[in-house]
Image (cartoon, rainbow, N blue to C red; front, side, top):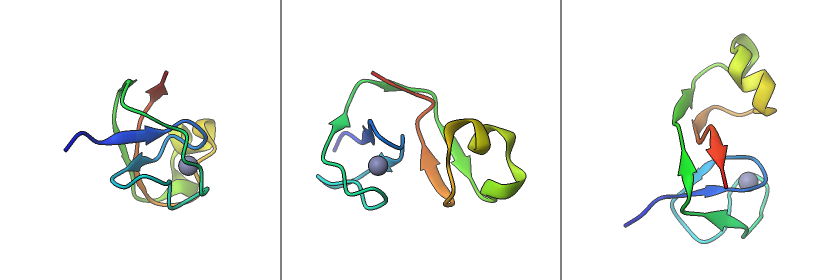
Length: 61
Ligand SMILES: [Zn+2]
């Protein structure tokens, strides 16, 4: 199964709807991959607006 990334919050999503923001705007065309463990201690998480731990794509087209 191809994992998709949410276009709204960049979360890697395994279903049809993003569990974080509820968006169904998902893309298979994404690049980069980060695992956020502590969003408050991560500069990259702050840049992407990530507030929850999880897996995220850096770029979503
Ligand atoms: Zn989302």
